[in-house]
Image (cartoon, rainbow, N blue to C red):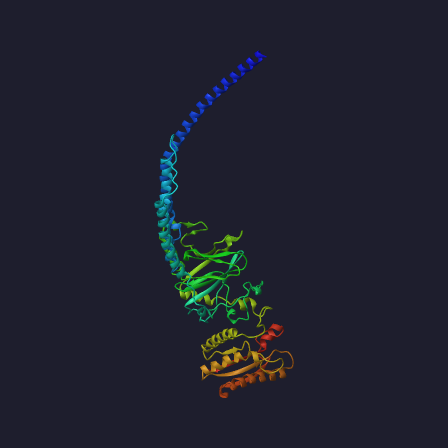
Length: 506
């Protein structure tokens, strides 16, 4: 038993000796790793200084290199009246944030170098320092105060809305103190709307939105009848513009970067902004021409330089879906005369798409806007005919004068065209005319002659009733004797059933 105990003690002593050897070996390795770690700390600390220098130099160099592609710098200065205020706020903010950025980066990397871990060094625990807290509280507060006050001043100038009473006043097109347009966002496009000749946008109701009425315009509101929907934004330079912004589905953002304006398009919550463009598209292009970055071929049109293909643009600044990119629209800023010419080429959405459809509340009626347009057409025809020499037969056909079927009774809704003639004869008091009635060749020829004569006399009687002297008027019915189209077709017969007048003397 004693021998066994002695052997066990010897084995235990041997194990202890072996473990002590291993501990010594591990201690030696640890001391080597600590030295390696210290060496790594020293090399990393030294590299911090050149790294921060290179990093900051590259930051400055890249900003300088790309400044002519950044809004607010180089050729991309603001093209709106208020844009300089926004650019000034951004520049001031950039100045102070750059100071903080450079200071923090320099101190960050310098501290990493200076206070690298060394044997025997312990970190200082600083629980409180009133002086430091006052400094880093007061200085940012003062800077932020100036930035916020400047920003609010710019905001109040930009967001100063046009009074409602001014927006609802009918204004002659082209003579407005401001222009109000509308942009409605949907996936994935902008639907634009301009006021017509009255200068006022009509009311909308989302319940009225349909395939034929994409904006839900209320056609019972006369102000809607002349509104038009262009494919691009065209605005006159120097004119104040109010943009009304809505959305038909999700959140969008109406963004005109070159004019420093952007506003969310929120479903159910109309928003707006007001701005005044101060540079035409051509003027902005000429500014770009002075910079070498824009005197290179356009990748999409190699035959033109980049500055030649530049356009202001409307973008959506919200990620509204996979087709977000297609929200882009071209914006053109032009001179006033070019803008007015563009306006004359636009057509009312109501008259081009809604008129006499099932959604038209005035179906079958003749509207005042139509009468106005037809008066201009009549005047143009009259002036053209009056310019002809006396040797030419000067005949003008009534386009809208009609009679009850088979009778000489004038229909009430078409006498307005005769009023155009009344006004013309008052304008030209020496003008003498002969009224002529015509029919197609259907039915008895004598009855047709009598009917055409009666209709011509009925028109003559209407003119006399309106104050035109009988001595300046005469009438004659030709029946089917003078067709202007083929009587073998219904279309031709309809053209032959007409009333017209010939100017005998100016």
